[in-house]
Each structure stands twice: as structure tokens, then as C-alpha cells.
Image 1: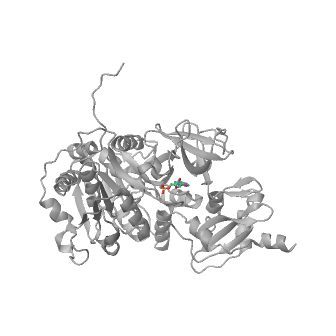
Image 2: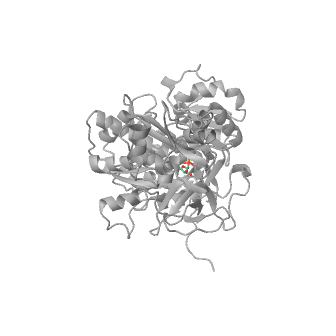
Image 3: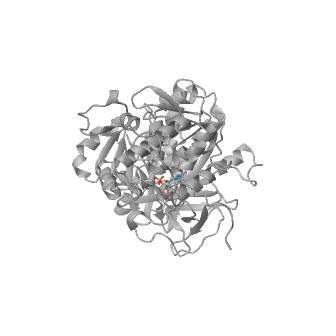
Length: 548
Ligand code: AMP
């Protein structure tokens, strides 16, 4: 027997309709790519997104066509998202930090028809124009005054395009399972693969992430999504802020400590979200200039593990609460958040911190399990490591165009490629990427755990751990450290700092000081590149063994 409630397809255009109807005058403030701070409202963004939809139809865009954005976080980028998705076309976010060859690969694979771009990216698009045959139109997210016809001959001006378009355009009115957005994985192994979100999956993700134990934002919040819209959908904030009517502050292309700080203070931001490196830059700026924070209450940090020193600094020095989150492009992206549970809420601050530093618990809609290499379930005892598997209505079912084949196990779970533990309170902790974990004498060593401890050394700016070949143990850990400017240190200093904090057999066999620890396109440590750079490296313990 079917229920008898209304059929109201869960399409994301309804989220912006709601924002226009009930929070129409709530502000969206952007640091524009052209420079000045620009102010608009949900009502204006709604009207302009409708015009954009009309313009896209005039350009011949049909439902299912892919329209890409190569853009920073601004109100225009939000208009483009809703304008594209509202008519059943697919909004494909491109990550400008990728190499040009990867961008071309992704654009061709997606068969993008239109690219919306900021002025910043015209040179790269022009240089590779001939390699993108499916792209019929490039629309520059700017006004006529900033258009330079020589920068990309034939490009259209966004403001001119929407000014000429009709404000009347029907949104939605299609199946909620219609594709809404496309985002490619960072592609650390093989070619990037496309995750094709549906309206329904985005809508459900939005509802789930609004919960207090998840993002917990409300109409009274002012939200600064530093996390880019091209990095796993800005963790859903373009939708959830519209859904609750929060004031949005969009940082444009300037994500350095000073620029982020200026916006936090000038716009009275209460909530923000970003990867750890962004927060490290902000804290560095605040310490250097002896600055405080007046309004910020809560930050969500994810994308890579949060170092303990960062949580302590926010909590103790600035009174800001940190929520550690885990997720991936394939999970829309929020998968778990380390908010207190009924079991942990009574613990004192120090005991709570142990749980805050884990990646957290799943909200309703996310199922998790840990399995061994044979696919057998492992216990949730907080110490047994296993492959983290995930299932739910906003988790990938298959990649775009079937890349990668069948990606679900017999129970319908997706293998995240992460190795994790789950404790008796249900808190999941990532111990590594399956391909980064160090296999020493048949046991696993977590590189992330050692990195997080090492980066807490006052002289460390960044730390990375990789496995190096060892004749007896297969692999042993090497710690790479980028020091703070102008300081000196030694291997012994770092090893004694780690002593007692990790199991003895986890102690790195060597510490190498480097000038640079490379970060990938989404701000994570690029271990693949580090391994390439360390190709000729031989462990001192391996050398000793060879000569023994
Ligand atoms: P992406 O799809 O680019 O967002 O990358 C997803 C991957 O980032 C995950 O599979 C994890 O390996 C890693 N990741 C995300 N959040 C965290 C976190 N809080 N701690 C450790 N690793 C994380």
C-alpha cells in the first residue's frame, strides 16, 4: 500500500524559491573577482538565476546538457548553479587548481557545452581552446566594463547575457532523480571519475546537513564558506544556507589568512568551513598581528585530518568550537561529523577532545561498516583497522559513464579507499588512505596519526609521513618536516617529541627536513608527488641492514 501524501519532487530549485519567499532580503556578500565587496540578496540572486536559465535555453541548452563552472565562491557562481540546475541541465564544477591536461580531460569526458568562468581563468581556457571541441560557449562571470575581447575572442559577458534574458522561466517540474550536478574526484590514482548527483540526493543531503549535530546552521547565522564550490560542492553550503536563510559571505579568490580574517570581522561571520591549511594560515596571521575574533563561534574542518594543535588554538585562544568532519566527493560530501553524543557530552574538555579529533559519527542517511580485505565485517572496538565502507541516498552508486565498473559490494556499500577504526561510541577515525598506510612486518602504521602529532611540534609548519622500502619489515615510516621559517631542528628533536605519544614500533626510522611539502588541488598533502620526489631515497636503517 502506498502512502497518500503529496508528490513534491525534491528538486533543488525549490530551495532557492524558499530562500526568495521567506528570506528574500537576507544578504549574500561577495569579495568579487574584480576587487570590490559586492552585496546582493536571495531575492535578487533568485531573479538573476531565472534570467540565466532563460539565457541558457536561448543558447540551446537542453535538459541533461552539462554546463561547467570554473569559478571562485561568489554570488554569481551561486546564480549559475541554480540557473543551470533549475532547468534540468547539469552543473559541472571544475577545479581550477588541476593541471590544464586534467581540466581538458574532464571537460571532454563530461562533454561540457558551456563554461562559466571567472576572468582569472580566461588565459588557461584560451590556451587550450582547441582541445575542448564540445564547448560551444564561454560565459565570463563579469560585467561589460571588465570584458576584454582579446582575452577570449567570442566569449559572452554574463551581465549582458542575463540583462537581455526573460525573468520568466519554469524551474523544476521534472523527476527528482534527474541529474543536477557533476563533480570529478581528485584522481590521485588513474583518471578522475565523475560523481553525478541527482536533485534528490542534493536535497536529502541538504536536509541532513542542516541538523544540529551536523552543520547546525540557522537563519541567524552568517556563514563564510571558504571551502570552494568546486571542492565537493562547498560541503553543501550553497544549498543549506539558502535552505535556512543564513547570510552568506563568499570569499572570491582570496583565501589567505589576512583576507579571510578581514571578512570574518567586517561581516560578523559566526560559522565557517574550510580545510586545515586555510585555518593554519588564518591562525598564523592572527598570531603575527595579535588579532582576536569577535563573532566567530564555530568552524567545520575537514578534507584532511585536523591537527590537535589547531583545535586547541581555536578553543583555548579564540573561544571557537571546532567540528571535525569527514567526507568525500562520492558522499556529497558529508559522511561523518565529530559532534558530541549522549555518551561523550558529559566528559570534561580534555576527554571530549579525544573524540573531537576523530572524524566522527554518521548522521541519519549514512550507513558505515568496516571490513577486512576479504570483505568480512570487523568489530567497532576503536582499535581494529579496516576498510571504511559507506551506503546511503547521497552516496555514489556508479561513476559517470560507468567508469570504474561496479563499485558497490554485495550489500550495496561503496569502498571509500580510507582505512579507519570505529569506537564503542560510534566515532569513526580515519587512520589512512588504503594506498598510503604503511605495512610494516604485516601490521599497519597510520601515517595520518604520526603527521598530526609531528605538526604539533612548535617548529613544524607541515609534516608528512610515507613508507620507505625496508628489507626486513617491507616498509618503515619516514617523517618529512617543513620547518617554520628561520628555525633549525634535528632528527633527534622530532623523534623525542613523538616518544611516548605513539607505539614504539611506529617511530619513524628517519626524519628528513624539506623546503616544500606539496599540496594537491584540494589542499591535501600530495603523497604521490612526495613519493616521486623521494624515489632514490634509502632508509638509513635499510642501508645499515645492507652493509651488515
Ligand atoms: P575529496 O573527494 O577530494 O574530498 O577527498 C576525499 C578524501 O579526503 C577522503 O576519502 C579522505 O581520504 C580524505 N578526508 C576527507 N576528510 C578527512 C578528514 N577529516 N580526515 C582525514 N581524511 C579526510
